[in-house]
Length: 407
Image (cartoon, one colour):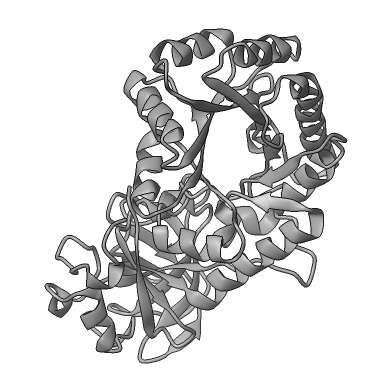
């Protein structure tokens, strides 16, 4: 396992951190009791609200328990071992990643149960995974969705190697995954015929269903796709390994439908959800469609990105020193929600456009050059990957920890 994070040194390569923090260990920096607004942070800076982060982890753990599901959160969202450890401490039984490189990061930090939510066809990765599984260093499961892909897995798995496999189920015009259910039994029987391979279950991702939406028609599409996963599980079950069969899906938007439909699989099973974005939630995309949106049980937006107004050349118009290199806009532009100028106040406006390093702010509220604007985000994945070290702050914006990411 890698060294503890407290002994890591803050470097000038960590965007947004105070100049006087360079060369200090994280422990030394936190001992100065830094505050996001009064300790010379350089803007823009991304911060995570501790209270919201903990709430989201707790709420998902409660939901999984209520439906009899286990959780393997998709940590590609954050690529933060520290956040992943918080999720495991709350009951997550495995982590989900997107490829073997991501798996290797979490292996270094001591995580032992990993799912690669993808087909793996790189020869070196196939060989490395088979050795990890065989030597019981950890357990890694990855996907297959065709006999052609399975043949590549078999070719590069050593005679003494071991692979754990899910059959991925897909949908027309979607992403990867078996389209025709008739192919499921063919792939399953081919896995069972090879002593090096173990069929651990079936999987799918409902978020890839075309034109899915949080309305009656969209929810029906999600349910139908989940029913296809259940049908695939019925076909594959007789070919499973000696371990308990796993049926799995579930992003952060429709996980209640997934749990309801996949729980209809009647044979002994582990129901496994793989939600990722829930951990920090957001201010628009997930906020408008996630299952708890109309209940008292809520996820809270945990990500804030603070930027400075560096120019106000027209009335009601300001230029922020923040752009696409600092904040994601793959679904929507960021959402202004607060202003800091010797104190914190609410703020509303619109980010009309983002360049690589500039944001175009329109607002009828008062603002001035040098003031700070707090921004919420829509979809967390493409904001996290722009920050290597992120302050974790309490409600007073005191920095209580710093979270490392690996992208």
